[in-house]
Image 1 (cartoon, helix red, strand yellow):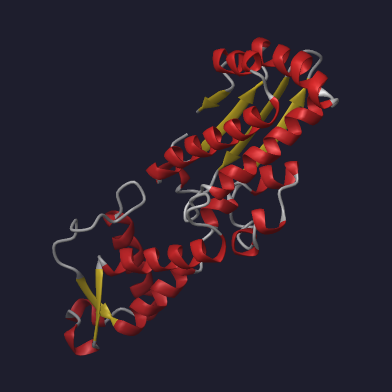
Image 2 (spheres, one colour; image 1 turned 90 degrees about the vertical axis):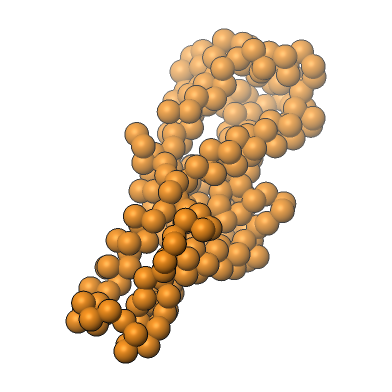
Amino acid sequence: MAEENLLTLKNGPAWSAALAVDLKRQVKKSQEEVMREYVKNLVTEIINFTPPQFGKKLNGVAAKKRGEQTTENQIRRVFEGVNKSQVPAARKRRDENASISYMAAVHKRKRVKGRVKKGSVKRRQKVMKGQLNKYIRMRKSKVGMLAAGWHAAADEFGVRGRNFPMWMRRHQGKASSGARIKIKKDSIHIRFSNRVRYAGEVEIIKLRLSRAMGVQADKTLKKRMRKGLKDAVNRSKIVDWK
């Protein structure tokens, strides 16, 4: 689905053997415990790399503020706030709700893969300052929505506190999400999804999630896994994007 990023972790033959035999012997934990711990850390990294966060480079309150500023900058690439006398007659007749809806529709059309590129709008549209400021505040209040789309995975695997802060969690009721884990005799399948409506439109999310996967795999491998296990993981198809 275009609107959904699905991440599936497959505990296939090579990965299963590696975890069940080598890793279990090293850490004295069951296969399920090992997988749950790995996925908890993975979900933490994924949230930490979901815009506006960017791993250690930008996270927490600083990321929230940067996200809000980016939101405002993008909107002001499309609209210019002016006095009522400078607004075209047709827009003057719009009530406040109609003006907000109009700006939302225009803003959506101007975005390409989730962003309004610098220089892509040749002439900004003039709208009343007060209504533009209201629209900007409304859009800023949605910062963190994309990361909130991982809330089902965060709940399932126990990611809490500063790893999933309130400015993300506040959107849980509106951010559609999914997570499930299936345990069979010889395999474990874990799948979690971000179903926020525009998730599939944000091109940068896949690049950042790939980096998150790499960071977490590197941490896990360095911490616990020998070269033989690393080779087994490299040969396995652990992750599927759909």
